[in-house]
Image (cartoon, rainbow, N blue to C red; front, side, top):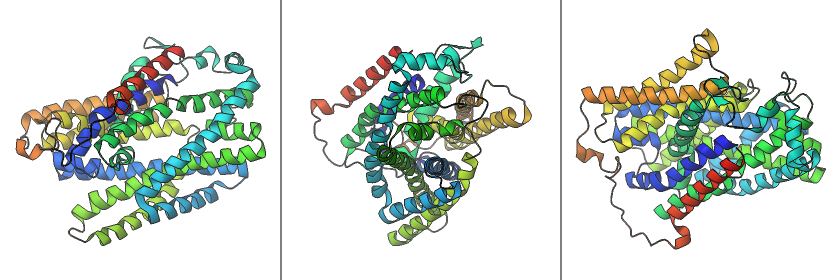
Length: 469
């Protein structure tokens, strides 16, 4: 719960205040396109290809989670749930494009809240409130450590449940993974870029930070209630942790409310599938197919190809959902994917955005070096035993921090020995060299101030972190 507030909220504020003016000023359609303009074609192709792979892998996670809900609560086989859900998502994003995905996500958000809030309330009442929940957690395998986040994170004595010290948590998760996800993951950034103007685009992540403050409450508390009330959930793999909230819903909610809860979970995972598949077709169409395979075609051609790419992305996601099914905790898998695809990109992107001396060659080799670093640490931990970490999450956090650091070091070294782009080619691509806006921006009213919205979000995050320490 605390780690979310430490990473996600500051990252969303940074996106709204610092990054959105840059995105609007650069006039790029995607993050890979920025890398092409800022660096060179090899950097662009490498990132676009890796990003496309990452989006269909994450879409597969959402498809599997959706199918798991249908299996646990309705008895529908996993493969049937995956295929049917994929078909529904395919229908509305193929016909409606990004707009349909965004409108559906907004509506689905409120359904998700309606599904999860009753679980929090009923679950807490059943276990005797917060004090009863705390006592119940102490009697599980987690013990007292299950009630704290920062305690037991000393590097010399790691005793917290996730097996990680504060160093990888703060740097690897709180900075690299969180900031990398919110500022360079185009599945998220493209939503803000679809706003009508810069002012609305900047306020999008800032306003979104406020409901995000509640996300740990409606996910962590039900998880702890499930740990206490569902026999075997915290034991030696009797039940998968992925099953916690669906089984809790089945145990607590009456039929009518259970139907709403199922709808809420389905909506949540469909939103995730739609976001990633729409990002996939954008990157494949505009960053790979158009510039390198079929140049100079009319818009109708690329629209048709984008729809074909959408179908291909959904089909691939059906198969990648089987990978997610092999994890007892899909959160570990998601963090692993972000380590490969977001951490190196964040280093290359953020350095290139602020340092105009950075060269095209440095952009490419830094990105490659960071990605290889993350891969080497994972293989050495999982398969060869070369590296030893406290847990899968600990490995992901260390790998993310290491990928960022190696990327940064290689970037500086290569920059020293290679030639940068001419300064005039960096207009709109480096901070402080943005393209002048073509339209006047109305003065924001005091309640629309980005600094007020961002400051209050950060303050609320700090207060919640302190309260639940």
